[in-house]
Image (cartoon, rainbow, N blue to C red):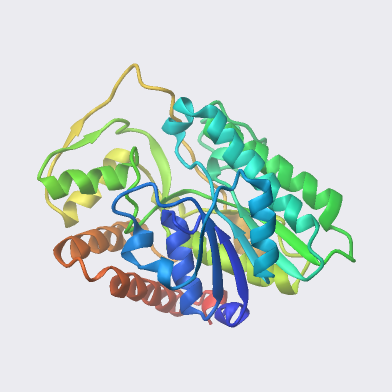
Length: 361
């Protein structure tokens, strides 16, 4: 199991105050890693970071990924064995309103991390996280492979494509030499959901907020299709890829970590499944004048299967069940966040082991 790869190791984690970053920090802490977090303060209230009391349980630094000097100093002070770069402006709709901040954060922030890694003189394995939206999405119905064209018609998607191009250029220019102590790779996940996401303009937290108030869920893109996956799915892939790359320089340099095809569902289907576990209703909130958002997107994960023997663990129904269970349980008992988060990580690992996942054995 990859837990032995992180026990006692120093891990520099950017974006640790965000939704995915908080889940990853909790998992790393549970495996005995010493985690150094670098991020802005949580931008939602509530936030999973605060609900898990992570500020008191890891090395917590509030700083901006756009600050090259601060990034360099933070990584230097950590002396990391592993780097996970998750810090980002993660919202498509916000990128329309804040394009400059989006490019500065997602492109230059990534380059600041890469520049610091270029100067490291100790062994380190770095995984830089982008998104499935980095592909030039022609909405042709075929799942995207790692070698497909990068692109994006909105600032967010194009910024992630630009980050992928920068990662590939740095890898080929600086990190492929046999003498380089640093190994890097990138990972691209689908639409991640799970307990503790409180962001605006995301369908699951929007749904939960409505249900908590007893209000109908307003669905703005009911027929848009996404590769929904529980947050623990890509995190297991991140950890497994990093652990493998640390031991084998021939591990993949870029990897899709999406769900099984059955999880490619419409927003309408997603909301309908949520309502099976938390009764309520939804209304069509479509806006014909809204900014463009892709209607169809899916990932091919054949490379992850073949090179890492990595596969998703939870199907669509289980993904929704565990997601809604987290929110409903914590809504009823505000003291249950940490215990429930740990329990879901343990349950996911057990299900992965029972399914014969290589990383869980």
